[in-house]
Length: 512
Ligand SMILES: Cc1cc2nc3c(=O)[nH]c(=O)nc-3n(C[C@H](O)[C@H](O)[C@H](O)COP(=O)(O)OP(=O)(O)OC[C@H]3O[C@@H](n4cnc5c(N)ncnc54)[C@H](O)[C@@H]3O)c2cc1C
Image (tube, rainbow, N blue to C red; front, side, top):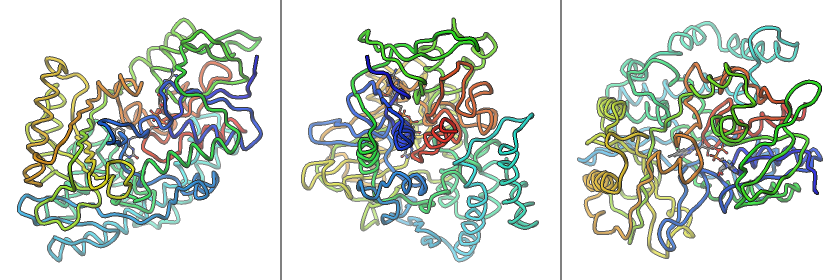
């Protein structure tokens, strides 16, 4: 029987990153993936014959360090690829366009404020940036390197100077709505800029909590408020190819049914895994990129967990709020007043519309005025659709995991039609271009991608579930109460999104 140094459960982008770092240090690594392809939520899948896309549809802040360390450029992924703008759509064609520090479609006052705002946020994003690729130490009884880690952040804050430091602390938990109202007048612009602090989380513009931190995480790449033309498919192919070149053994179509737990003098330890097929594989350690609830409650089993810890895992909040709409189109859709629909197109006329959509979702309803972010990935990758045809991919924010009355076929279809009607307000001919439509609600994402709750970050990224407490104490710092069992997925610090942070940090912690 083969014995491995590390078995990694799940070949999403974090599993691939973690496996690659370990293999590069000489470990014998086996990566086991339940589905038939690698990439997890970022895997490309055919949703209609010859039409393909991925659930995660844009790369905006994949770590430049991880890309460099894993030599992804040689495998086809370029972090420096061209950037496409974010465009706030308006039914009367008065669109707002953001491209780096440039903005168009707003009054002069907002133009100036936007420049100042982006520069300030960039300074804040740069200040916290090193923290995303570090283990956030637990509080109390810290070792010297752990103390240095906090000292690093403190030093970065000091370097910002007093004025910036005060401003950072003032706005840290400020609701997005207040931050936007303080800075801008244009309602469409405010909705667009607040989006990156909210998408994927159970947060709306008026929620005080974590939105600034989420926004800064998303601004940690060079593509603030923009998307990279390098594309999700290219990223996953490069991660796959680089991991294979480093010697990682990758098996797909092999769901892990159980993490095998044994006993040694120091307590419980992970001995290996048992596949659904019954095959058992041994390793020195097991690293799970599956979400925390699935890892502990399904794969480890509550019988191996202390009751307090088990309750904390059960209580983790992780119901997804983002659905995906996929359209197979006969041609490139025409949006009123837009020459080229390349980039991130937002349908969110103002922050109230976002807030009301969130209110509906809180009570298990879908908003009748949906808000969404659209990309047409086939503009940059012609392998995603037949020649001349296109794929439209939309994130629809605030779609409840548990719909009042349930997500039956009728509810799916009714909501899909409402979304298409909404799109048609901005792209009048789109309905006639549709060859096929698909709506994946958080409930569908849970079933098809194996993520409990279908959550963007595997578990809500809120203050109580972040930093040194992510996903919860006892399972943070990429360690768990079971010896030799580690986490490396989006449920760990710094959270989800195609960044590679959790996979990188877990590998560094294990290699220590
Ligand atoms: C609707 C939606 C849209 C999103 N859009 C974007 C976006 O545009 N840009 C962006 O940056 N981020 C986006 N995200 C977030 C991003 O996709 C995730 O945070 C990220 O993919 C998480 O990566 P991961 O590797 O940690 O986990 P995953 O991608 O979830 O991968 C985990 C892997 O583990 C496998 N697995 C689970 N259980 C087992 C088992 N028992 N045995 C074997 N394998 C198992 C799964 O099959 C999966 O492949 C989106 C998320 C959602 C839900």
